[in-house]
Length: 434
Image 1 (cartoon, helix red, strand yellow):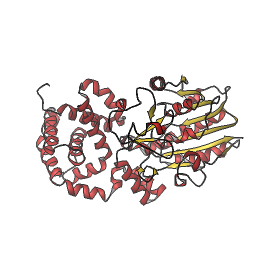
Image 2 (cartoon, one colour):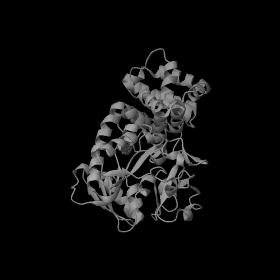
Image 3 (cartoon, one colour):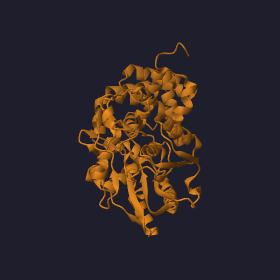
Image 4 (cartoon, helix red, strand yellow):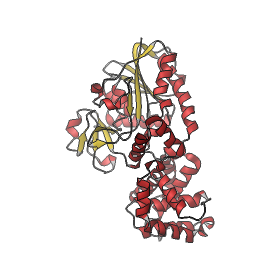
């Protein structure tokens, strides 16, 4: 399609990826990874496609409400809805000319017989959205929770209160910062990366260049890791000679932290493909760790570790700034299923922790069943473990990020410094074996 209008290929990929993500409830990154090679787009167009899809999912509640108010009846056809959503996302939230967003949406509809009949409707509705943009955005600003599914918004209100739930939702509307963990002294890279050094030692980078083009990438000086995600590994007190098991280790940020501290690390993950990427990252960083592609539940219990880090599979509701698709590909039933798995993994982690050793359990979830309640249930089952409260000074964070029991509870709208708001939602508890 060499003669098609500029940007149509990017919109075609965004539309297809958005439709598949919502229909199959598959992670957007996986959908794009499968479809991008077939689309054969230039990097700039790939970036536009991703921006459209991510923005559409981040503001899906707002967009759906705006479309519903401007349609005489429900859309019905998921493909038509996805095309309208992709077009409205560009008009409302991206620096894209309105006429380009409308025209490309109409052209994409005409490529399919079942959508071609709706070309006029698409044109009219998207033009109306463009004319009434200010009203749409004003209404959305007054109701931040509309961009979360109803079940998830209700959970946040019940757990954190209406005001905090609204702040969480507002934080999820904003694009996440680029945070880096440095292998050596982070102060040495502040100027080169034009970064802010956070109290925890994480570098927050203002530049928006592709990650591989940033200074220090090729030299293996740092790796990408949200500031909140970097905290749990520090709770182990890793040092040379310590034998540490990192369960569910991929993508490997925490493994790198432990290896950089000189610990002898076993990185376990059930996905051989993800472990391969972990090994590639460690090689770039000049770090080493033993890797084992196995379900952590199948680990033998005859070899004990000085420390165990369990970053358990979870609903990932704390990561919606980075992965807004999570809100729309998970449901409330997933929380209960994952909590049951977390309990089994915690029991396994306890079994391979030496007496006197430490176990850190963490999840990037905002749901108490996967955090505070999980820790309480574990301690009720395991009388040989006791909570070891976290001192905010040991990790460089404010006491506001800790629970009354001394566990870490990070909410997305909070920050490590007033001038650097925004973190992944995280929970972590440190447990010592008697």
